[in-house]
Length: 262
Length: 340
Image (cartoon, rainbow over all chains, first blue to last red; front, side, top):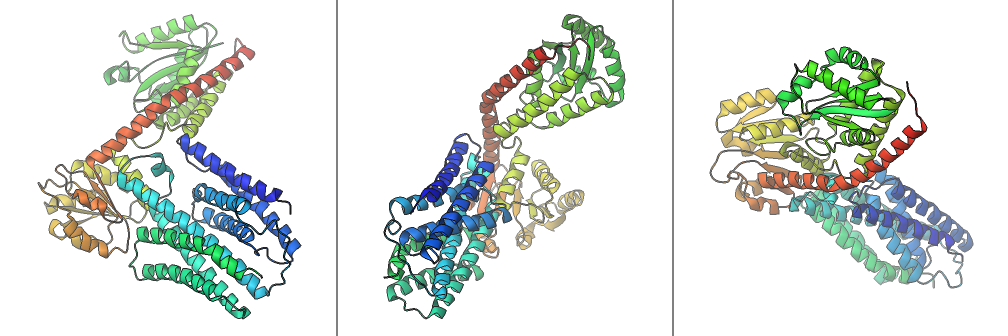
């Protein structure tokens, strides 16, 4: 399978990442048109890659860890492009591009499944819907973690009382807290719907996969519940969203291995 | 064609000298007409601000024009020997580009001068006093200023305690509309800081002071409400920004007092600006989640940092300006004209 589109998308994300580092070095750190065009270019190339592989496989291309990582990268970019401008969080792109670049690089260099013979899998539409929606939810959680990281960076800048480049260029800490919370709600809602779809399919679920998925869902549910009860301040929410996402990222290969068509 | 500049500024003349040279809007047309009568002068723009009075002229005979300008200024200031600086191309072009970019200002990187230059140019243009070279020069200067500001950090940060406080509040809350400021003590600096917030659209100002009458008077002046000093914590629920400036010899805002109040805030951040010496707020408050405490030293340190960053950027700005001066001189060489 030709990987030129994927390589092109990875290059676009690298360009955005590189530009961010350059701008940071020059003391500007304002994501401009370069970041947006590079991310948009990466998204278009990834969309094309997924579409072509979907046509070849005859199903949504999420049959291997490689597929999952590429699809999740696409989801992260999709959600960034939708919510970034809406929340005036263009700087989220500067933090998103390195994350997606690393995921794509790992998919190309480390993850297996893409280069082997294609497994033509006729999947239940509910299962395909469940899998795709779960990965989009992961995309939202990834961005929530990015917003959380930005929150913690800005909090540190404000506490240190130093007027560094980051302080002036990061968004207001209140906006970051709001974005972090809304992305958690979005991811949680998508994951819940995906679980309902998975249940509707009636497919057999491995108990380890089920337990790991429920733990991730419960982890995010607990964060949101505590927020509703006003027991979790924004800083703790930011930390928790990063922690749970790290756990989810570690659990992803296990879930994928257990749910891959055998 | 040569661009000739003559003028005085805050560096070489005190205000009592500068005010003699100042050209008010009411006399601009007349002054322009007068200096255009100088032999060899094709056009002129007069820039008159509180920190500088400068004459930019286009001429084929700079020596004669400079003599004429000196004579005119002596006549205008009653014969006093003014410490005038003069530049011819390309130094005059570089000077204008530096002025437009804020490099020649009292506070490096300030942006007000660009608006003043634009006004001066528009006024001269409306009087028909500009020439093709002056038009091109000023348009180029505006472009240079824009580029310098967007591609360097020459305007970064704030250069006064009040504006640093407002900037920091913006970095905490984003939009300041609808936010509430509480003034604990009604000192002069805290009043100025509160007024900075009011000018940025803050929603409510609560003033409290040991002398209630003073608090009431200040609240009335800035459109806020006064509360009794002993009850300040009762009015604290909706406060986003606390400005402290009491004369108390010990901390008024302590961790013991604040912690119970913070529990009712649902994680909303609190920005404490402590302008009092001795300090009103316990330093350890900064360790609390969502509390950002800045005392007078930390605010002044940020002002100092901003000025340092600006000074460090001057070299980059000068390089940009040199490049533009070269471009403009090149254009002038290709567009030699003796009249307009």
